[in-house]
Every structure is written in structure tokens, then in C-alpha cells.
Length: 156
Image (tube, rainbow, N blue to C red):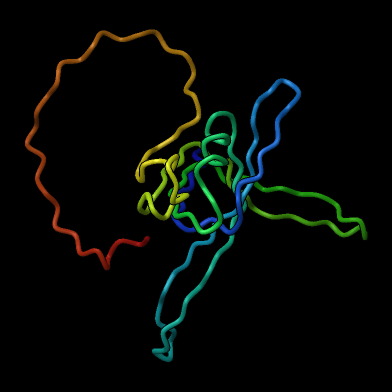
């Protein structure tokens, strides 16, 4: 089976980082995404979705250092169902995303606006399992055609 989700949006709060006893970082925040559409009556509407995010390891530390509430990000990861029993005895559940890759969007000025702001567009991933080193590949050139896409058709 395949479990992959990609979200682009704005963080709804600053990243909160805590550390396990072994020293691994765990970061938590949430993302807001929106979708604009026309209702059956022709009225323009907007639907907003809020999803909790969890970062691990170096990605959590980088997110904590460079991202703030309102930062634009693109994340991909695994969808997870969290279930618990509330203090009043009711069963609760929510979906969250365990982030595998993080890409910061927007300009440098939109990040921290300071001297240590991360460059926009940098991508940070969870470490991949160790694999034997492959022989260096020679640079290949291919004729990839340009695709003419209207920016209004992009969903984020």
C-alpha cells in the first residue's frame, strides 16, 4: 500500500521542538491550506483545512530555526490517524502528517527577515537509510520539452 500526502500552505503557529532521551529532535506545528471554488449557485467560496505536522531529527531543528507562524512551506510525508480518550471519556481522533520532506517557499524576507534566514526554496529531508556508494554518474543532457502551464491551473 502507498501512503503519501503533499501539502502547501502557511504555518499556523511557530514550530515547537522537544528532544527524546536519546537526543533526537521532534518538532510540532500545523499548516493551513485553502481551496477556492464556485458553489452550485455560482458564489465564490473558500475552504480552509488545518492539519498538524510532525518533523523529526535535523528537519525539526531546521524548521524550528527558520520557520515562523505564517511561513509558506511545501511538505510531503505520511498521513497518520491519532486516536485518544479525552478526560471526559469520549474517544477522539484527528489526522496528522509525519513530514518526510520540507521545502521552504516564499522570499528570504518572508522567512525571519534577518541575517540567518534560510534561502527560499531549500529542501530538507529525513535521512535516507545507508546505501552503498554508487559510481559517479556522468552528466547527461536530454531534450526535455518545456511545458506551457497557466499559473491559475496550479493548485497551490
